[in-house]
Image (cartoon, rainbow, N blue to C red; front, side):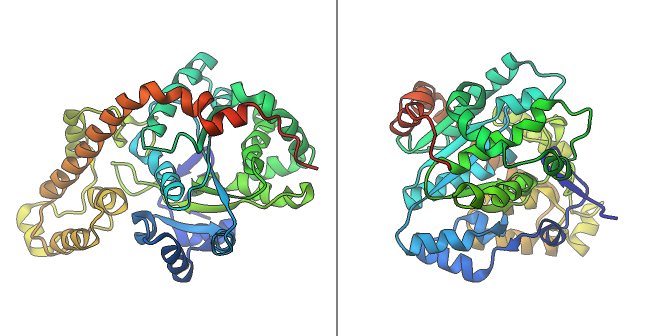
Amino acid sequence: MDEFEVSPWNVSGKIDYDKLIERFGTQKLSNDLLSDLKNLSGELHLFFRRNVFFSHRDFDKIIEDIKNGKSFFIYTGRGPSGPMHIGHLLPFILAKWFQEKFNVNVYIEITDDEKYLHSDNLDLKDTKKYAIENTLDIISLGFNEDKTFVFFDTEYIKNMYKLALRIAKKINFSTVKAVFGFKESTNIGMIFYPTLQLVPTFFENNRCLIPEAIDQDPYWRIQRDIADSIGKYKASVIHSKFLPPLSGIEGKMSSSIPETAIYLNDSPEIVKKKIMKYAFSGGQPTIEEHRKYGGNPDIDVSFQWLYMMFEEDDEKIKEIEISYKKGDLLTGELKNILIEKINKFLIDFREKREKYKDRLEKYLYDGKLANKMWNTIYDNVK
């Protein structure tokens, strides 16, 4: 019996990513693929260098499209159930990187419908409020407003519905029941919802690339099963690992347990308090023992966060790792390095966020791509 669970609605246990690749039937991002990507882009993002994005479906076809001068587009999304934390940013950071390197369109679905249907505690007015706040967080990463379209499902449904119907007709209940574990008690909105998450994969007549955490992969398995039957490309997907919760390396950071996460609106004081109090340590019980035996960076959350996201310099992260293993760097000192890095990131982020408040409409309605999308009813699927 597996000791961990990964699904769109639950991630728990100590995740074995190699086993997860076998279970989901995906492929590792090989050195050859990453070498090709580096040659085409000029550099590899930290997420690729550090194996944060580790698995894929048909990413080799994206590489071939780039080599052959053919465009592709990026699609990812966010379920607006509350304030965003640092772990939520991973797919958006990489989506922006691809946009910068290859000048591609990015489509970001805000699934206010799904979060309302799935939650007993959220009203539509709540999901709308979080949709706006989350969108502002996302665009503040610096997406090109002329090549980025952010849309709320409850608003954009008019343009999605025809295509959603064509997709829905290809999917039977037994499929979504098996893939998502739906029961007789599941409301019919949730049963229909997967069709809406599939719609944006067909927004263009090019191949779609989806950077997402691997818990979202079940949706793309269905998309790939039906794509040929409606004369469209199967989506290409690259999967990320989960930024671990502060409490340890099991599971993923959860908004439902605030002390395990660092939120984008956390003050420097709160960041320091959370990391000092809750960040799981790989160090020894005493300073003397730590100096003698050293720490374990593989289970130390502060090190894992630095490695996966906050220390860009490859030589520097190696120095930190060696120093911690030798016992020269203490747990408190390691935590202070992370606190400084995160607070700098968040201060810079919030300054950008203030500037982007006046540009929100460009991404939702008025920008070049947004305006084009709002004036298009999709009828391009057989």
